[in-house]
Length: 124
Image (cartoon, rainbow, N blue to C red):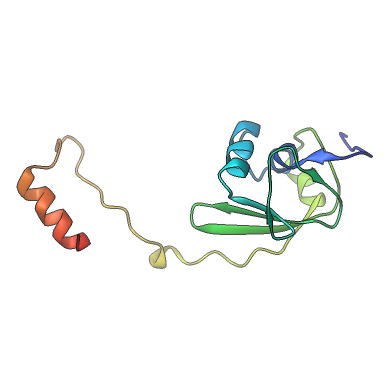
């Protein structure tokens, strides 16, 4: 197991407990301001300690976790679940999530008339 006595970077920990698919995505989320540690914006190299609260914003939903154990390497889902306490609120139901406009496959770009109608629906 990859347990560590010293400090662990925020981006490495987020990746190792499977809150981000890749370490690069975890670092990018930190740089974009989507990660907060104890209420403050986190830089990718910020050190974590057990007991810290980490908030990760992803796709309109915020994950709130408390660090229980520090790890540096990516581990299985069962071991990763032991390294954090998940205090996240429940996800909103799908029917309340905003819908994304979709066009039929092969329909091509919208015409000027269709763009005007789209803008009118979006009330621009």
